[in-house]
Length: 95
Image (cartoon, rainbow, N blue to C red):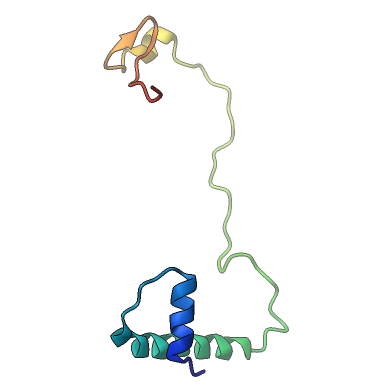
């Protein structure tokens, strides 16, 4: 599919990209190649292919929830660089 320099300029403007005049021919050629490839993919017969949301099967990698003993406050605060009044002291983020 042939893309014109004017179409490249228009797409660049929509995307708020500043493309130099000397690069327009290259981008037109590259965008044309991409559209040709997409067109080829559109011609592939996929009647016997089930729709999928992912190319490979994925599964949940979470561990099962188990009730376990938690750290008591003193044990948890042993890891704090500067505990303050029984809590973790963190830098102020809202002024």
